[in-house]
Structures are given as C-alpha cells and as structure tokens.
Image (cartoon, rainbow, N blue to C red; front, side, top):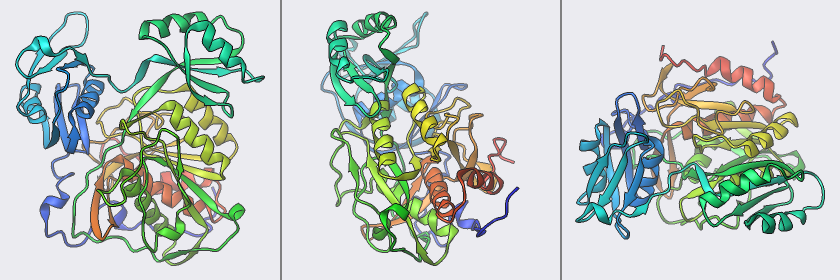
Length: 462
C-alpha cells in the first residue's frame, strides 16, 4: 500500500470518445470491430481488414505472417489497397485485397496452404513474399566482454557479412548467402566460446492505425513545459516510426528526434504518421495526470523504422539503448511481432532493474498468443477497450496482458483532427499517464500498482 502523492482522475474520455461526431464515417473503425491492419481468426479461418493505401507487398507480408501461408506472387505485380471488412472467408476476402489480380489457395498435407497471386497464369507466381518474423539469412551475435574487433574474424570464419554493429551492446548483425547458410553457421557457432548469445534477427512490421477527419472533441492540453536542466527532465522515449513537426502546446515537450541510419525520412506535409499520432496521444495522456501548470516531462522520439516499412529487433534494441543513454526513464513501444527476441528481453531486463519502465501495445490480433515485446515480463502490456471494462473485438487478450485502456484517440495535427485506433494509442495514453506520475516522484512499482487498479485488464469483457 502507498499514499497517493497527487491523485489522478481517469476521465470518461480515456475510455471512449465523447462529443459530437457528425461525420459518422470518421468513427466507424470500432463500429465494425476492425482494428487498423489485417487480422486473422484462426478458429474460424476468417480475415478482417481495415487498411487504407497499403502497397500489395506490405499487405501480403502481413497476410503471410498472420495466416502462416506461403505467399508467392508474380514479379512486378502491385496495387494500392484500401478496404474494410470483418470476418470473411478467403474466397470473399482475397478479391477485396487483390482487386483484378487472380489467386489460388492450394492446400498442402504437411505444411500451411500456399497462396499464388498472378495476372494470367499460376505458373507466373514465382516470387516468395517474405513474412514478418525471423529473418532466415541473418544472425545476431553477442560477444562476451572483451575486444569487440574479434567479431570481424568470427564473421569471416563462418561466412557472414557484418551489416550492423553495436559495441555498446556487444551485438552484431550478420547476413549470410542463404537461409541454409545461416542455419549451418548457427550450429557451428554454438561451439564458439567467445559468444554470449546467438539468435535470429526478427522483422517488425510498421505499426498500423486508422486515420480520418473527425468532429470529435480533442482533449485540451493546458500544461506548459517546465524550464528545468536536462538532468532533471523526466524523459519518455517513443520507440516508433518518425514523428512530424507539431505545434503548440505540444512542441515544447518534444526533444530532438533520434534517427537510426536506416530510418526513413518523414513527410511533414503528408498524412499523419504513426509516430506523430502516438506522440500526441502520449502528451494528451500526460494531461490526465495534471490539468494545468507546468511539467518537466519530455518526449524523446526514436525513429527505428526504415524505408521498407519494417524494422528489426536489432534496430529496436539500438533505439532503446540510445534512448537510455540519453536519459530516458520510460519507454513507449507501440510495435510488436509474434516472435520473442532474447536480445530485446535481456536489454529490457537490465534497464528495468536500473529503474526503467516499459509500456507496450499488446497487439491488434484477437488471440491469446502474446505479441512481443508486450509479452516480456520486464514491461507492462496494454490492450484496447471499447468502453469501460469492455475489451475491443480486435484486441489481443494474451495472459501476459496487464492493462486495458481506450483503443481510440483523437488528436489535432496539421490543422485537422485525426482518429487513431488500436492497442497502440491505448499504450501511448498509459505511457503519458505513467510519465506524469513518475515526474512527481512515484516509483515505477507505485505507478504499476495504481494503473492496474484504475485500468484493470478484464479479458472476459465484464
């Protein structure tokens, strides 16, 4: 038990949007129970979609991951996809995704089905679409303490090319000629006494969210940034896509962005980026803990996504470690993948034990299988509600889930209101609340107890 230093009040607005919504199309995402992106119900073998402007390769990469299908496509085939539907079987769902392209789903006795996509002949579907998850031709090697230059000789010996380095983590990204070559090297490397760890690099999809102009009320942020030395700021790291320029009153809370070498340039005049949506949602969450005055909280955006619309566990680890080195205390991770990463888990463990706090989005697939890093024991996993105590139909409900917050957020950017949906804004809201409490002297343990009391996870929806 502990005494609340400064109680925070949870407004109805954190659970559900309030106020006028004259354009109903702007708030349909939850109305049909469809989260942003693609979702697969394994029990019924049905697909749901809520996507706008995706490329065909991105769509098929996601489809392969969630279904387990091997997807092959005719080289050069592409189209932009915008569609929304819920729980359709493959015969009805695939035409909505593929448009005028032809397809065939071929069952296989000893493995998952194969999906062929082509213009005129199935024989033309020769290009394998890589699924998110383990990158077959890459390994991450972590050296035992010592001279980091040893990795060069190790890479040469086992036939790998170093394409990423982190001396701070003693971890190096090696690429091999093929998946088979990487598998052979992995077995041989198990006998190398200079290594502390060997693992696959994991691919993360760019996180998804809906966006639409809406007349719903945007929470007012009446806080001002408190002028304090950098060492006294409470920094929360936003590990995400790139963020765009934001105006007052938000801009004073935002530190200069950290960008990895592989990260893509963000268009300040285009559509709202995922990172920007989470930045504004996080700061609105901060406003729930303090309705006016000044705050020493700052947000450090860390862009870990590259131009291929994916990132990897290696780059996410680099981003987290860089943010920690720059003084971040709390970390918002509105991204995920089904595959755990020992590198990320170990890093989160180390930072957690030194006083850091991780808040992760549980994922937009309605399954009891955890997404990672939300499934890590060293952080707090947040899923989405569609009302007080009611789990959103699209939301992950894994046993590792800790909290449940609104899966909707309304923000203002570039002179327009935007509706963002999913477990990502749920996590970002909680990160803002947590940062506000931490900035007042609460410990991460105190914050976690209080959050679980105010935002309990109720998987039954009761």
